[in-house]
Each structure stands twice: as C-alpha cells, then as structure tokens.
Image (tube, rainbow, N blue to C red; front, side, top):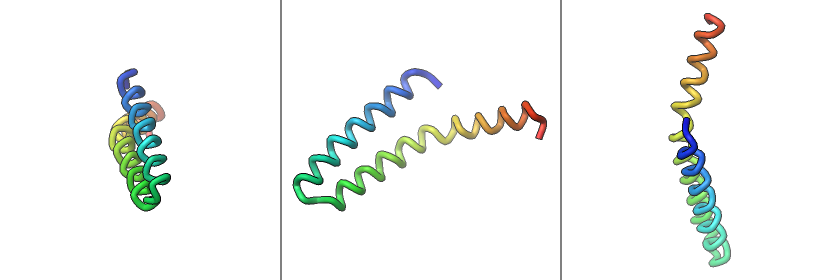
Amino acid sequence: MGVSLIFKIAAVGILVTILSQVLKHSGREEHAFLVSLAGLILVLTWIVPYIYDLFQTIQSLFSL
C-alpha cells in the first residue's frame, strides 16, 4: 500500500463532500446520498484487496 492510495482516498472524499453539499443545497438529497454511497463503494473496492492480504498474513503468521 503506497501513499498514492491514501491520496486517492482523500481526493474521493473531498470530491464526494463537495458534490454532496452542492446537491443538498439544490434540494436533491437523494442524489447526494447516492453520490456518497458511490464514493464509499469505490473506496471499498480499493481497500478490500489490502484487507484480504492482511488477513492472509495474520493467518500465516499464527498458522491458523
């Protein structure tokens, strides 16, 4: 996991926050929720392989 992944997650967080606020102020709360959900799913797709590797390492470390 590199620093670039952290910057990507931060960039998505900033963009989702800005889009969500703009949509909420324009009266489209449903769209703001969907934008937030899409951002969360995008970040989770980036993070899940690293979590899987973490669990594999822990499993091999403790010989489970």
